[in-house]
Length: 522
Image (cartoon, rainbow, N blue to C red; front, side, top):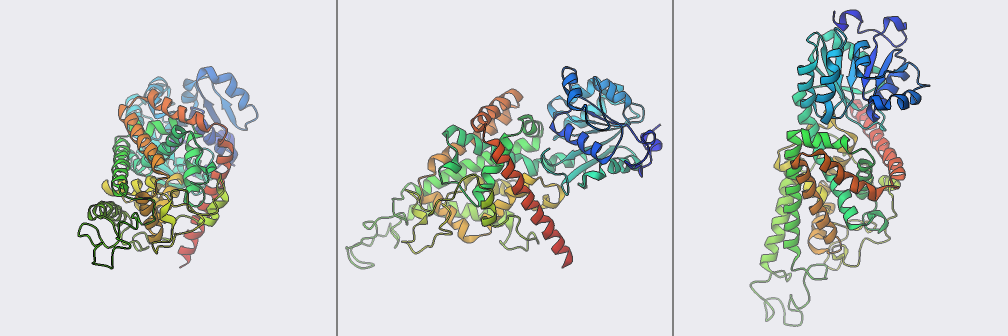
């Protein structure tokens, strides 16, 4: 007898306990605990949970005062008793865990999985679950510390009746999440497009800073505005457990492809930056008085040279700069279209730089110029974008858009469908940079003429290539060691960054909701 025939999809947490389904969770990590807490808070009265048998006593003590939550000794006890049950384990172990506990599934139960990669989960469910078990899988696209309110919750009706899907919807209704209906295959494509490269970018930032042994926000350089988002989200990722990201990167073929392209984009853009800037001097325009023939006659006179343009830059150097600009502009046009709001038909994602400054870990410098930051000088007739911010190459963002362009990914396709808070914020930063001509020009000029961030960019290139190789190897232990070595460098900074990052995400989500409401009123 199917679960859907025993329990009405209209069942409510307020109904009597004996008329409610028993809800089971195998795996009480951060996400498993989040689900158990939310279900219990909603008022569901029979929640059975378990973790590794070795953690039974500790989990039992932890849940001693949790209403409606019963800790079971192992997955067999949860599977045998649950009308709806969820496997909340790492994708790396899903096959092994379902192989062990799947055969104990209660007759007619609905089974779900909260894994970040669905291909291994699908294979495990089809191999080991009884034929009478129904499959309605799920995935909350946010971390355990983010409120589920308004966040996407993917539901996958793989092998189930409409009534069973409706029952699952009812069980999760109290979360306040926004349901997104996909297939297993669609899920893995969407999550690769919205998470894989975003994670790779922030992982690379953290590794680059750790390798350089510096906290960038303490140097007064990468501080304020867009840098606030990059720093807070990089630390947010490293404050989590490594397996949260490893499964998606290693087990999702689309993710591997995108991470590899991101490393390629980072490398090729950096080479173009170095080639375009290798003739520049310490002047803001990249040439000296001698280059332009000062004191050697008027224009077209003795100082004129067919191989040097009127600004003093060798034609070959101009060609190199042109190649960099053309590549950046090509990526911009492919991802953002003409640069106005017509492509996305929405207001920009990112909040103002002034609001973002409230969440900065460091203090902004008083001036934007650094000891070797000629691009912020005004002697060549160009005004700095904002004298409160130090221009830099924004290599991570240029490479992100370049990667999307090369893979023909339109990030806005997934924004309303299944965007995580991290993806939404990073896309917002990229949008902010690329749709502001002055900001984008400032980044390109800084990439060519500034030298103060050249070593930092090199560290980022090495880090991005290293993460790409790590994922390509497909060895979880190598991923874990690389992640935890970087994590150790930032230990002790997570509490403050986590608080500021959470507040920043709340502010952005509040802005997004208000924007949605205002657009619906138009």
